[in-house]
Image (cartoon, rainbow, N blue to C red; front, side, top):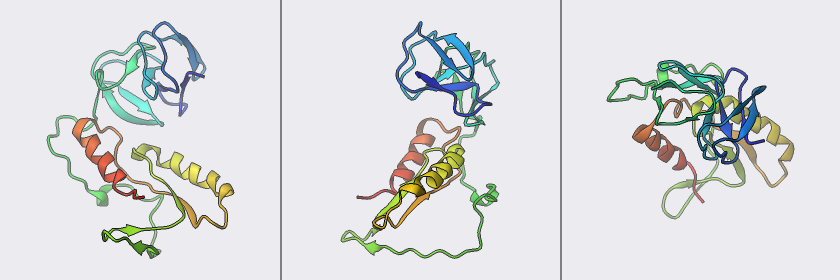
Length: 186
């Protein structure tokens, strides 16, 4: 399997391995020829995507086509733009986000320890932190499936949802990745 369609409504698939131009691949029940080299982990168009149409991945729009994208083309920053449009400034407003899937009145405690540098640490937990919010459901599914591997030496396996990353490009995306990576300490 060289390419994989994540959600049945996606109009792109992900190259599991690098795919060379001219390769014939199958994804989402469609067989087609790749018209450009596709790096591993990048997207390839499963169907024609017209300029201005949504690029759909994980069942959600992740951007808008900047130009017509033919079947088999590499879908990346050269032909996709953020759905943030012409906004020059982006303000994080979590109170406007739909939190219904994970809203709770329950109070949580943090049971950790203080490191010598003053930062907080935890022990023996597995954290699943998606780099983009549009895969929160997938992260939760991994969390659920991973519970079967929990042992007495693992305090917990948790997915951490957030509303960021989808449709972010450039510096905006880099800032989100830095913030998320800051959650992880050795």
